[in-house]
Amino acid sequence: MNPATAPDAAADFRPTHVVPPDGLPTWTAPDAAVPTEPLDPLLPVRLLDRRGDWGQVLCSNGWTAWTDSRPLVPLPQGPPAAGGPLTRTADARRLLARAEETLGAYHRAVADLAAGRTDGESFRRSTEGLRIGVVVDGDAVWLYDPDEDHWCYCDGTAMAVLAPGGPAAPRPASGSDPGEATRIVGPGDGR
Image (cartoon, rainbow, N blue to C red; front, side, top):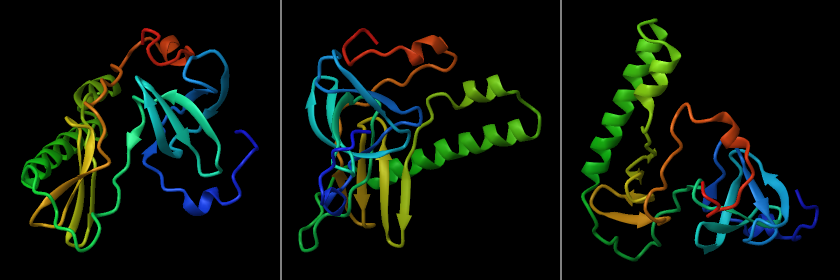
């Protein structure tokens, strides 16, 4: 990555997103004209700005670049500030039930694969589209809502939306053309 770093970037750095497991290409501006170093897989970044599908990200070393913001995975943020009441939103039980169902479906698919009742391709088909996120810490829980592409915090009585995104971006289909995954394009270039 760019060696120019801000001296105190790490001290003030609070990531809002994580780069997907395949990494992401970057550009110096939101125009796909001048590519730069790619973002490493699973790298925590802070989303600074959005322009359509483009997102300007900040890395912990102070380096910034533009990338396709759609595949960035939003991170749960800390609970709302103490002293302020949580805003009541949808009941957390709906997201908890969905997480249980999704994890159960994944668990069954893994068990079938491990027992030899299914093959790798069947496993990929049976898990396609499954997506959850849950962090439980004592009486607090962070739940990812894949329909709304945001995290929610719940203290057991009320739930608040954290790290809001937009509508969930479509995920690439399993078995898509592997050449497509390595093609360097910018957001809005027909992907």
